[in-house]
Image: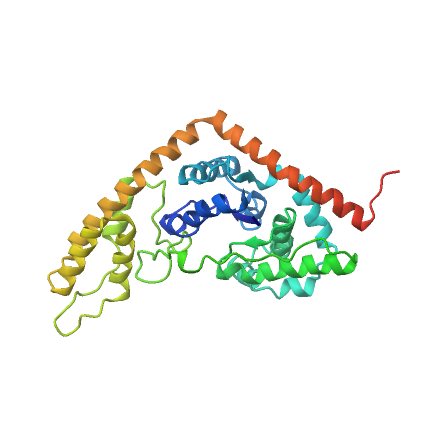
Length: 329
């Protein structure tokens, strides 16, 4: 059983893409691996330094994780800022992280273009904090997207550098947890690409039915099939792909047959898809609402997660201090 670490920012709610992609795989992972799932509230400050209500955002994401099926009895789910050891390891790793290499990271270049008036030190050292999140538990596997692969390579570099500088074989070099064919990619409603919050093309687990219907009815399609052209456009295929996950097989077959016979009415397709998405998300939304209303349960989960995560983190920091040479008089 390997240790796996994954985090999510409290600035983003779970959408269908998260659910059918990462979350469904997390549910498998928690049965087979030693999993740490954390809410990255420190990380969120790099782009939202003055959050309107950080606590409420963390509460929302915690409730969504739990409602989606993450089990605090099987996994360690915690809030990043509940572990002071992460901040300490972040500080220690920063002593051997070099400005030049941090400035060259793609994520830093992208962020300073996106927020030129808020180029803070946290943005520059984001890969160092990410490394601290991972190696504080001596994790060997990390599920990351393409946009984070370079930062994971930086984590490997910092772990390797620590071992080299202090002449130890202490930190493992974590590698990407590859879901392979098990990773389902849910497209957005804009006709291309994946579903996401920043793209504005997502359906969220907590979204109300009226909003879902409005979004789906506005989804991009095309001018329709003809006998001359039976190739399914990307935008229509996207709707079929979403339908495959939320609708019954016979519903999907019905609309595919309508498309093949050039009799499809996209308005009918969208109405059915919206209805099926609403039927799918409603139980999850109601569960999120129930969990959010139960402050005692959320407090218990957060405290239990912090205690379990700190057990690992405290051991790491104690050993790291000894390796570096910190001693009490």
